[in-house]
Image 1: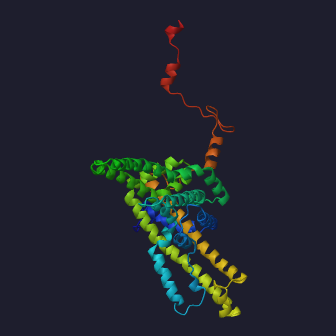
Image 2 (image 1 turned 180 degrees about the horizontal axis):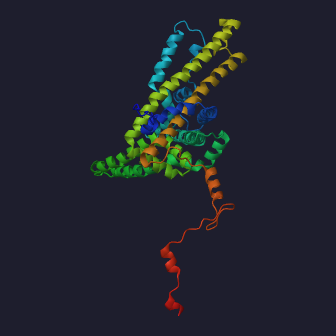
Image 3 (image 1 turned 60 degrees about the horizontal axis):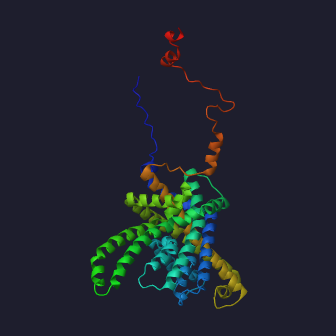
Length: 422
């Protein structure tokens, strides 16, 4: 008999179990969702309309042009207009290289953060007038409300898709976020209440400076306490700016309140700060490539559509459709289509942003307390489980009753004592 060598059975290596952060590469598939993109596009339009309305308020800044380009930059993403019209100075390849450079820098991926961070940073500028503070507070509250409703809906859809590989409609997602709007709004506002407490303490130290003669000396002696209070405020501010998207995701995944969303994010960031930074770096690198791919696709669509139409209409006549100085119905409609294409790209950026934060939250939770990645709160499943539970001590209909076997010790205890019977 010949000796037969045992066959070596090769098993696939569970890379995602060894390196859970590889789940971040699922974000692109989660972000390319028409419902998420439409929700994000609607949120962007509401933010833009709100900004236009706030500019007409009595406390709006006089120089509104300084604030307008920032918000316009959020909406008017590439494709650039130079790709739609012939340009003698820049070729298509040069414009494409510029888009690659901007995509590699990753600025577009972090642009959604500016809706929240820009008003917050304005609140902490020294020497800002009351009108600017009121204007920034109005923008901040409106941004929190809009992202609580639409960002909560996007993260809810992404959480169900990531954990259970199922899909829910945008109406069900909006219903979910609207019912929990108070929790979603309160989560990012609670840290400012804590910062307000320490700000009042610093303000009290400053009031001692109004004492004639010894006021400056007292404030100088108490400046160490001001450093301590400012250190606590700095930690709260940094965690809030970095973790407010995760607060929204916490409520969408766990169906908890605003305090739970705040406490979980603070706990995860303080205990897993290096893992969080690693996840952010991977997301930025991967997201930049994804945004470049989508931006390239959008630019090719706009350019090739112009190129194809120009063969039938003529280059000069086609170029007139995109000249903003032409006050005609055709020009308005053509520029409207260009804006729709740009807003759709903006919607993808927002969808990628919230989907990435959803996956990051799952990974942080799994690293911190070992919760499985497929665990997400589902009210329908809990209601079904509650309906399936039988009454205490009663078996479900159609199922046999399984009796517990009696052990010898229990049988001896149940026998009556002969002395008691006599």
